[in-house]
Image 1 (cartoon, rainbow over the protein chains, first blue to last red):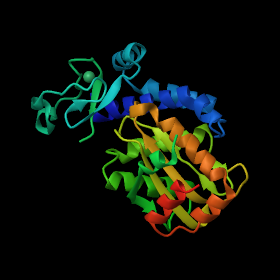
Image 2 (image 1 turned 120 degrees about the vertical axis):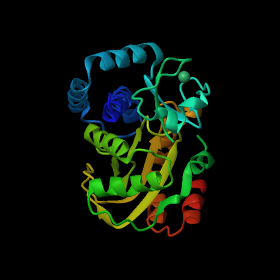
Image 3 (image 1 turned 90 degrees about the horizontal axis):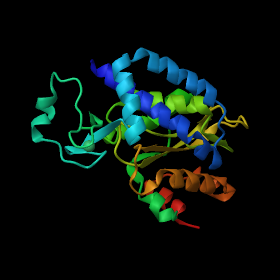
Length: 111
Length: 153
Ligand SMILES: [Zn+2]
C-alpha cells in the first residue's frame, strides 16, 4: 500500500464524519445544501481504495467509530497507548501501514 | 461555552490583519498555511481537500461579510482557530452575495478533548451576529485587540 492510499483513507474518514455531523453544524446556523453531492464524492473516493482496505476501514469504523487515528509523541490518540519506540521515524520507513496493538486502529503519524 | 475558552484556541501566529487572497480557494489556503507553518497540521493537501469539500456541503460564509471555514481532520491533534481580515473582501459564495472581510478558520481532530469543537463554532456564530462586534473586528490590527474583542461583552 502506498502512502497515498493511507491519505485516501484519511480523506474518506474526514468526509464520512463531515456527512454525519452536517445536521449538527446546520443547527449552529450554517447553510447546508450539498449533502447528496458530498455523498457522491464519498462514493467516488471509496471506489479508488482497494477492497480489502476499504473493508477493514468500514469494519473498524463500525466497531470503534474511528478507523484511523493520529499518533503524536508516540501516543495512539485512539486509546492513548504509548507505541513501541522501535516504530519511530526510522522504524516506519518502508512499512506501509501500522496498527495499534492495543486498540487495533490504523495509525497516522503527525510527527 | 465561555468566551475565554474560545481565546484559548486562538494563536498569535495564526493571525493575519491583512489577507492577500482574492478568491475563495486562495483564502482557504492562506489561512491553512498558518496551521502548516506552526505544525498544527502535518499534511496541507489533505486538509485543504477537506476544507474544499466542506464548502461543497454549503458555503461556510454566514453572510454580512463573515465566514467560518471549518472541519475535522485526522491530520491534526488540536482544536485551533486562525483569524484573518481582508480589506477588499473575498467572494465566498455567501447567500447574501457580500464579499467576506472576516475569517475565523477552525480546524479540529475527530475526537477533541471535552467536545469543544461544535460549541466553539456555535460561539463564533453568536459573536459574529453582533453588528458592533463585526464592525470592531473589521478594524483590528493586532492579536491583542482581537483577543480583547472576543473576551469583551
Ligand atoms: Zn490505540
